[in-house]
Image (cartoon, rainbow, N blue to C red; front, side, top):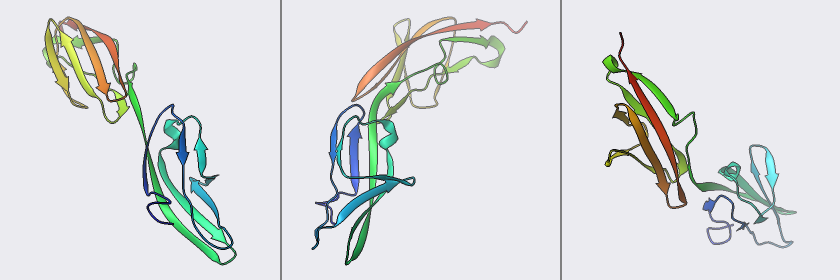
Length: 160
């Protein structure tokens, strides 16, 4: 097995079919099996790529004369996702505590996040917070596989 017959690094995209190739030569022809987390996979057509395919695999070619193994890494790319756990739709903040809110998005490659309010844009890296006042922010997360938008309503209350 070498880089041309069993590449060590794969980048796949969610929802697409892909031919996962890992070949070895020998006489008699070896059987190739790849394992991840104790589960065995045979190289071939992967019909519907999901995020669960991501990870480290060990591919082993075996015939009566012995075996050879190769580590294979698969990354799975997918469009951004924002849900209530990483970007809540409603925030109630306390004015005296320097009210800030955080909006994160899941995706690979990591998405760029831009939140807009009153024609002003805030570019967020993962984990950056925005100093907030009352109103609705429109947050958009984008990577090369797509984008997702969400309205985030902020209510700032006085501590008294």
